[in-house]
Amino acid sequence: MAEAKRGSAIAVWVLSVLLALLFLFAGSQKLLGAAEPTEHFAQWGYPSWFRMLIGFIEVVGGLALLVPSLAFYAAGALGAVMVGAIYTHLTQAAPGIPVPIVCLLVLTYIALSRRPKDG
Image (cartoon, rainbow, N blue to C red; front, top):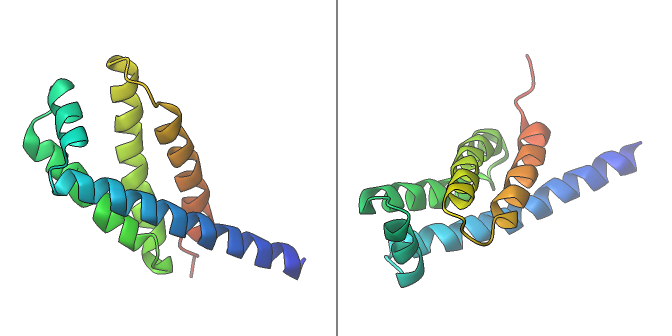
């Protein structure tokens, strides 16, 4: 039983680090005004400030995923961003929809694993 718990803890950490890296990269690209995300947000009809907001949430959320006491809340905020990304991909017929879906599923696992304990 202890080995299963340890394996689960390792899985949560590995997934948290991988997602943190993904969100730090994606968010920094949005904040720095990289061509691809800037063009996509404009093409989808979103204003520049919204791209910056999403980038900020992704960077802060990515860092917070690495802090166990904050990971639950970070996963929730990033999960909301992923729901928006899924909606955008569906309504704009944009390619790459599996990425936000997989991220949302992994964020859900992290949130459930890191949820605050009662008492």
